[in-house]
Length: 150
Figure 1 (cartoon, rainbow, N blue to C red):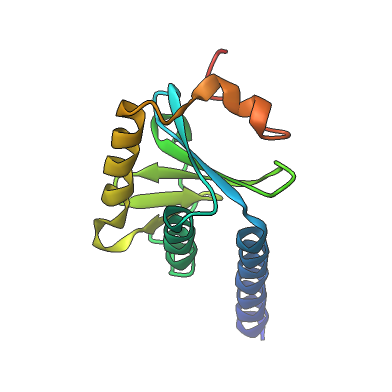
Figure 2: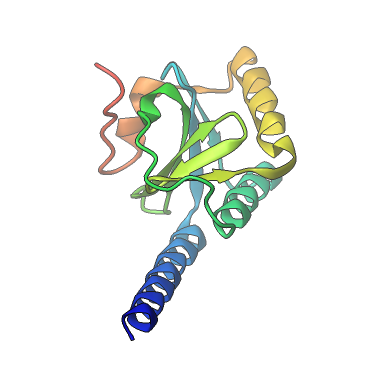
């Protein structure tokens, strides 16, 4: 009986987390990709790259995490800020090579799909199409970057 209660609790908890994720993704209007040095941020919104990145992260989070309760400091990674149309921060995701970290869980991104976005980001930074990282808190309500000393 205890095992049955445990399994029901775990299943419900997993389902509740998924519902929150779907709702957050549905309301995401902009994604800020902050490089790990906090110097630059690339803004994704409305265009094809935004939908591709949003879809990739959403699909990855639907898979089972390979690491649970990851306690790594996310300040050493690139980060994605998902923001709604009122500029409120919905959630933050850390990116480490071919994995993402969300709410303490690590997920593998298949086929090195993040590499395409990283190289795209570097080209945009070289073309001065980025925002300085310290200005993000002016553009995202309720965001305070715990990784910088600005």
